Length: 108
Image (cartoon, rainbow, N blue to C red; front, side, top):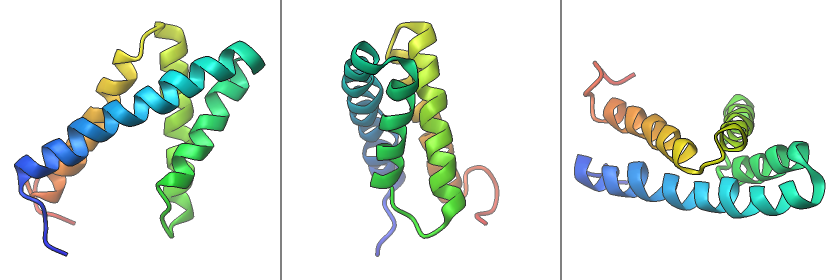
C-alpha cells in the first residue's frame, strides 16, 4: 500500500475522522445514552464500539482506545462541549501523522 502524502494524511486522518467520530460517538451516542442510562453507559458503551471499529491484532491497542474513548467522553461531559474532544482527537492523530512522515524524528 502506498503511503499517503502529508496533505492527504492531514485530511484523511487528522481532520475528517476526529470530526466524524466525535460527532457520532461523543456527540449523538453519548447524548442519547446519557439521557437514558447515565454517565457510565454514555462513557463506556460508545468507547467499546469505537475501539471495536478500530480492530487491530494487538490487545493493548484496543484497550488504549477504550480508555481514550472514556477519557474523551468524560471531557465531553465535564466541558459540556464536543469541541474539546474533537480537538484532542485531532491532536493525537496529528502526532501520529507527523511521526509517520518522520517529522518527529526517525520513524520507529
